[in-house]
Image (cartoon, rainbow, N blue to C red; front, side, top):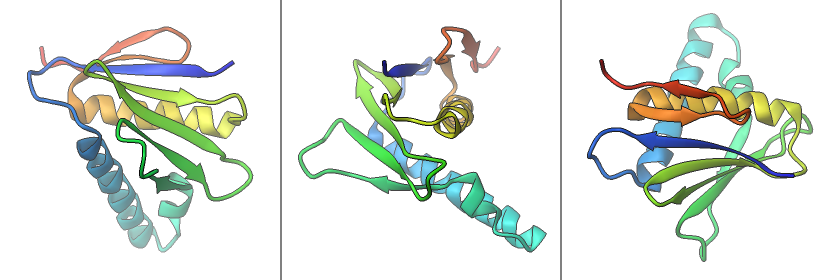
Length: 126
């Protein structure tokens, strides 16, 4: 059974998939820079996915794993809410990485986050 996490931004800014893609690109960039400082390919391990977009899908995209430990994470928009989905064939590595990415996105978007286990995390300004 697929599992989902939801991010609901608390600001009035419009959330778009293009903005989420740019944040994921930023995440890839900062992890690769960390790897350069450590003389290690940390970026490859921190983000073991390729961002894949289908021409007909305007409201979702997915992250395809680069090795057998990681398979698929689907990211889409539903009613001003970002939904991160782990399909049935996802691995434990996918779930761990999806939790990490959802927390990163919630921090950057200042969003309320409902994790895969139903627990809520608030990343709003106080």
